[in-house]
Image (cartoon, rainbow, N blue to C red; front, side, top):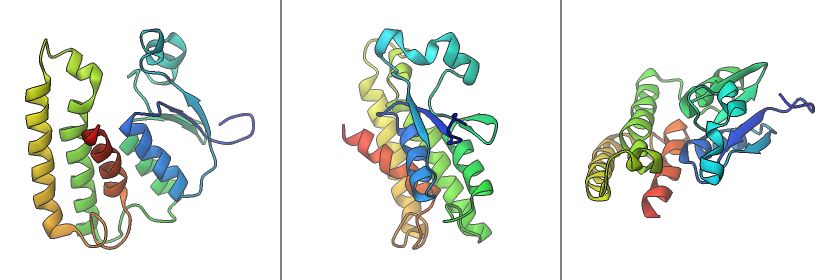
Length: 175
């Protein structure tokens, strides 16, 4: 928490993972402060000793809240859901909740990593064609899942964690 008592979000403006958390904070009406972590400047500010002390994974987002620091966007969103349950981002129905988690995991584990420049840099000279093929395959699978889960939103007619994951990923895919 900051001196003002507000949570602090360590974030990069183009990070889809940070974007998910910003949406969750906004939907839940949580006022927070942002500390920008530039993933490009100075070789990546996430690699600084100061940031590594906050998040040993050296990734954004990280949220300082309630006396703890949480890394990983889905863990942050789940914590917010458990400590500030309204509006709900996970349905109460166990089957719908499982669908939300499945879609969120598919996006955050199966699609998002291949849109990450630091991952692509590790894959050699021309990773784009392969990465695009895998990303398209992930979106194709997601489309099939959404045919049976979607209503107005990814799962039913209420915004959920799945929607928070989907919107930034589609925006990144279109870039």
